[in-house]
Image (cartoon, rainbow, N blue to C red; front, side):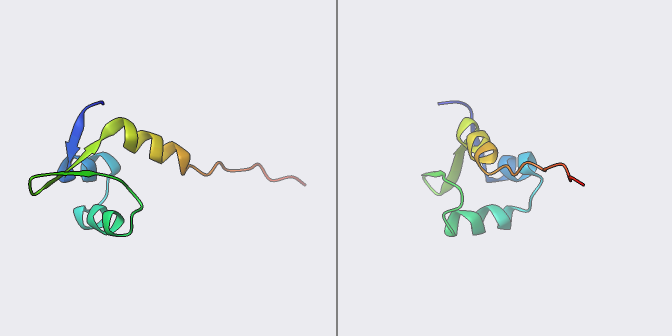
Length: 62
């Protein structure tokens, strides 16, 4: 397992609001683990999720 991030760190990393992170957790778009009352996120798992959801731009053809 790589470094764990809390919700604040993940929001800064993804440049999102914390509420978006909580919404995505509720919608099961991202995975996390709860340690006590605090959510933690595995950076490698988040990076893998990001790349698996990447949409590549296609060049326009004439």
